[in-house]
Image (tube, rainbow, N blue to C red; front, top):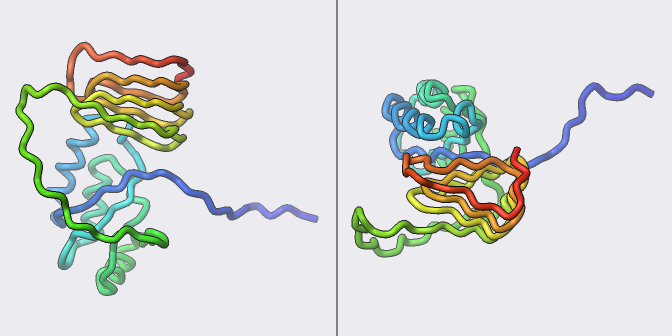
Length: 193
């Protein structure tokens, strides 16, 4: 009895999603390039899904894909597309359409705007109380990051401030992303990948 040369199995992955609010390829490329330059170790050649839910009208899908690729990211699919005409145009461009599964979230009215925070306001903290699994990437923008559970190998923590891990740390961590000086890592158990 011969064994098949392939085996097809289902799996799930945690991927970054780029939500487009503009359909101009050069604008997209520049914005993504800035993001990649902020964290090249984490973002260069990263697979991403492009969400087009907020785009209205036609777009040049091939040029958008080229813009994302030129910024150093790899498009694995397009999500958020509800318009059948738009779906056909995306398929003609050779881009895979991804369904977002059952039980999609219903749009909720945005809460009232919060007053802007002063430049010299004290730093905020983002707290994660669940395990950070392999493939997950947590980014604490303009604040410290506190993880009260474990961080698996293959998980990534990024913070503009300090990083505290009160469980075991087996993943990767990057602090001071926005060039804040004198940041520190704190962990109970280190087993970095």
